[in-house]
Length: 163
Image (cartoon, rainbow, N blue to C red; front, side, top):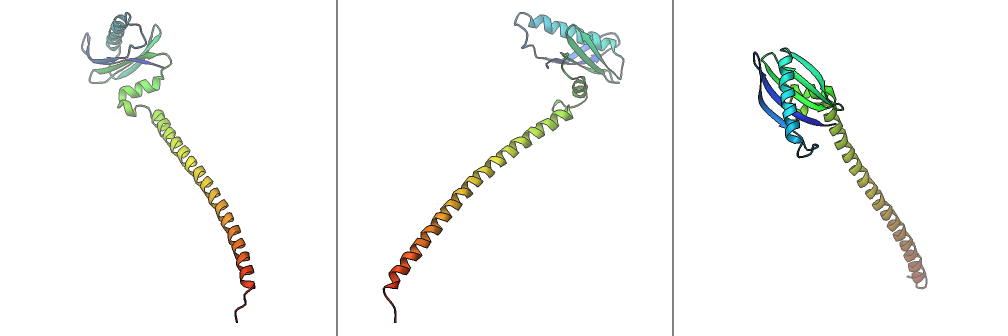
């Protein structure tokens, strides 16, 4: 699952103008990166030009999926990803803040955080249980010592009677 490009365009009457783009081409060799970036830029602009206002589309180009959304004000966004990247996440990303793009991702992150907290709580409970076991053993030992002290004290006091 890989996201390669995210670009913002303005769709003009005849041509789409690139406003801003971000690329992650780290999975390509150094010598391929410039041609792959050029391919993604050209494909993104071409898809924006061919998509009508207020609509979304997904286009498969070679081993990539290009997801485009053109708003009614001609502002458009294009995501170029591999075929494994979920379409739902791409269109949500185009609509919203990327950190809040996918509710499932947010829920998964909260679930992971809850698991960590629960794991830490269980560890501390186990440590307390071990400490309680040690405390019980010490109290039993103290009880045995106090019985022995009581017996010894009775023997000592039995030879001397108080009048």
